[in-house]
Length: 180
Image (cartoon, rainbow, N blue to C red; front, side):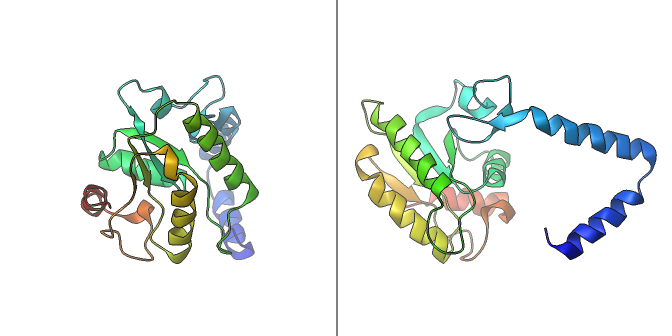
């Protein structure tokens, strides 16, 4: 958030009535109770060992979609097109290199998959179709080659340069169905 946006937010907050401000304060305080899932890095309650998606016994554990952001996961869930598990890589850097945190997350995923005893049925690299997303997808595909029977990317139903978060359900479903 830049200085101009921060200033606008501050003025907006000062215009709210006291009850709304108390509600907002309570909601912001509840954020302290959130943590990251050890398995997929999505949000979970701090008292839970894993997030709701990872705890769901009806999910296909042999299919994993690697996503960039939490909002991408929410978009997939809203569209209802995927019943596997997720792995959130984290915001891709504009420099076209993986940050240390992302490298550590991928290394952890590699170790977990290596302990499975059998390769994944499919690893879906569901990163945004940008030059940085494509570059990162190529890196991941090379690193995870022996850990999955099939490594796929989403089809280009999502426009190049677009973001999964803003895709409509039909485009996302089409991209998912026609992945290669």
